[in-house]
Image (tube, rainbow, N blue to C red; front, side, top):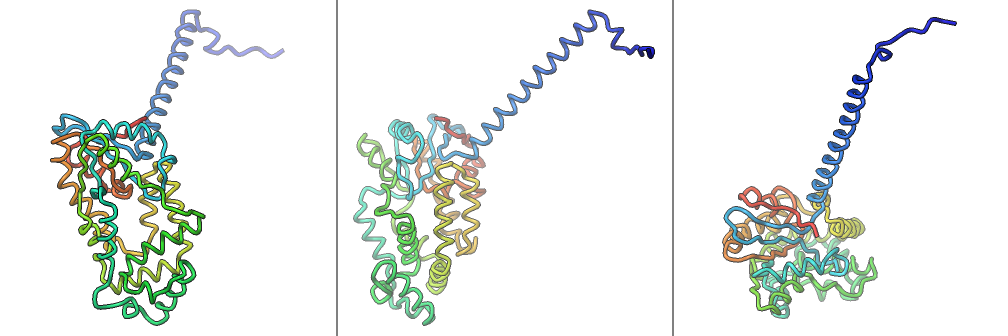
Length: 319
């Protein structure tokens, strides 16, 4: 029988063994604690990146304000914890939106008037081939062609076209009630202020006048030729919105290449910058529930990061 080789382990005393066992258990416990802390940190990090609802405090504010990202293709029933979000809206002193939407009919009239061409028609802005494509698309989609619609600005037509294509592709019969309007109606019903960050005219100028008319026509035709891509992007946007994934919402905006980043600036970045000139005084005067389109929250030029840079504490609301 071979001689057994003794090791140092054979000579460990009871005390040494007890100390070794205690140290091992302590290390295991600490490793678990570190893992748990890391897991919690990861959860918080993921929550911060998967969030539509934010609390704004600090920087001299006596009351917190709140920031919520909206999306007009999503019904309130689809938004998780919407009743709790609405309750916080009710507790705020004022609801702040992109516009004061108290007079919807008047707004729609102004937008239709602002969306009409002056002294030119789409036929003059497009090549014969592109005009025929637009005529065929609208006729197949809505039963009316460019003879009836050609007096509208191409960006107005693009809005109508994109929404109608999306609705038909998803068998939708009507647009969901905009949560912006629900928040503002709730404020009015509770005798709270409703404040618009811009006028209808300012929004129309950004959406329908920031691009030259011929360039608007080019964007319209591109979107028509790539309508399936547009449907997929809107579908993904809905999914990202319901998941609260702001990073993916930002990525989808970059994926949409119908306009260059520079051309998109008046619609997102410039408007954000204008709103950020107003928000500090509004939040200092009262607690605000700020509800604007979710794409205005994302990225380096979004409201979240810009408010943080301005010295505010902006943190996700866990409901």
